[in-house]
Length: 515
Ligand code: NG6
Ligand code: CA
Image 1 (cartoon, rainbow, N blue to C red):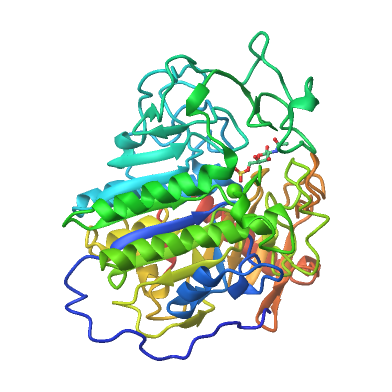
Image 2: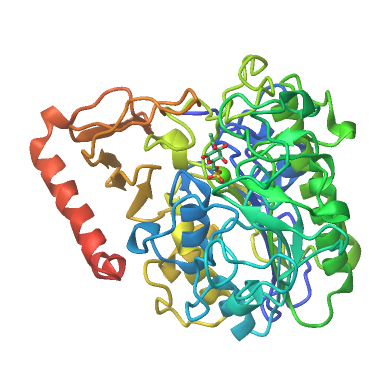
């Protein structure tokens, strides 16, 4: 168990608020990419300072047992936005940059929930959930449709996929931002465009970052990518400016907000690869580019807080800060992450990491800050899952009056999220990269026997947790001990948890029934 760092005194930090209960709060989701359970200072990070995140934790709730739904981005984000497990919907695995939109316009998203409650909604940063009607058929030189406006976002300024996938341009309300008509954009995930250099054939052009595995196709800004693209001209992003660009847009959105409350989905590129933070963050950590990217992430958080403060709305803004999956060091670029990590443990000592079924894959930082409402700050140990985001928001905004409005979430978890009780969910289901499911229940963790390689096979040095045998891990001193598989000792329990997992898999709304 980690020491409970930064445990704030249990006192009301903000009193005398004018009628906070009556006005609906603004909601800002700060959704980091690949930031692990141990990557922030208030969660025990070494070698990097995160003062802005620490401040949120000090004045809010810091959860130590919160989980993303999957250990990779697309399925994790899909579940957070829809309240549906990704394994219910084919096609929710890590998406290519030319994937069609994965959430269909007739699905009910968390952005729809906020719209129903009268909010203005906006998304910034990493999207990675597809755009357009057909994969590979988007015309990037005109409006791409469907896009985020079709699933509840009034405004969006996003990257189609990830920074390591083409197209390397921002998309504002469905159209390439800063579009350069002299350089029309073409994208393919099948073959290169004639005459265009690639990282594989022209390594001498990789002047910013070299790849360690994969990422050897088109070169943009001296960095090799996944996929091929041609054109873009002035619209192409510079990796060192991505954090600035999305933060500036979000800050502007806050400054210009009117009477309606707002919902901001602020999804950073940090600390996903390629890690190439702005030069003013270089050397801020002892860990090279990955640690510097954490410092950059913290700066973004600080800017959002500052904008809310200056607008005079911080008090009644609910900020939730979390990550889409666990951490990875070498995820495909020679950025020194492995060599320079030193004493720092990105998973905070948990086994596994990004892609894996062990806790390192899905246990993530989770901080809730809402001065007008949360009077007792501190650390919370209850089990939390991002699957509940939509239902908790529907409950907070009054869109639901206690009934479940997503396929798999649970509105009652509002009590845990806002600190009213620390009971937490009775169970959480998590999905690894190869779709192995694990179930945390009654203080145990069961990992289904699906088989697969023990280590991630394509480059990152991470234990997958896959096995052909069932795994059962026990709580020891308040922490799951994933080093000791006790399935052999508890065959009845293994069978019981296997059945529970089958029930959850086969029946929607199971959660309500089991309460
Ligand atoms: C992998 C990429 C990795 C990262 C990941 C998705 C290679 C070799 N590796 O396929 O770099 O992009 O996909 O990460 O291409 S996620 O956080 O968006 O899920
Ligand atoms: Ca991720």
